[in-house]
Image 1 (tube, rainbow, N blue to C red):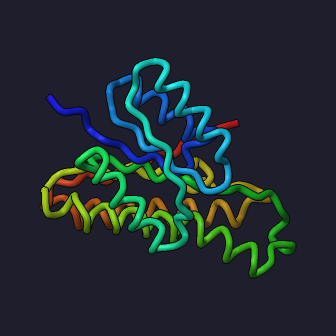
Image 2 (image 1 turned 90 degrees about the vertical axis):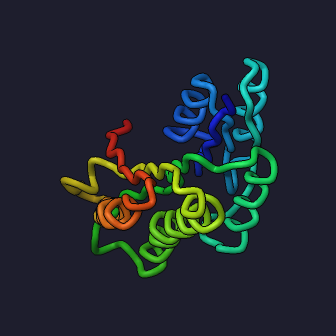
Length: 187
């Protein structure tokens, strides 16, 4: 049986790194996406390859549709499929609401919401819909459910991901594509 292929965005550190390692040890072909943390991404790939796992590192700024499309093309060319997408990439920022600037809001939106949108849409259009299979897993946060003081910006974006997940799950169910969200608290 052919191994399934998973793309984990923001896989170079934190939760994304742990997700990539877990899935690699479960036998998935793992695509380690990063934007700025090349050294950490390469270190993870080396660790996985040394343990006889299939892993590739791929740089893409998920805020940019062209880079995302190129990333998905490379993954499909290399592994032949994209079976699972884990939308993990994101940033957090602790600030008083009154100190959040429009630039802060836009940057967090672009990485969290627009990035998730771009990656999901590309995977769906390039592979999942026409093959009537796949799984999208959106990493959100407990703060998207209950909110967090001094993290209004972050809580808002993560709540948006929860709404996106619920709506997309209904839309894609007839195509046999699962869409779920996981809301951990990661300290």
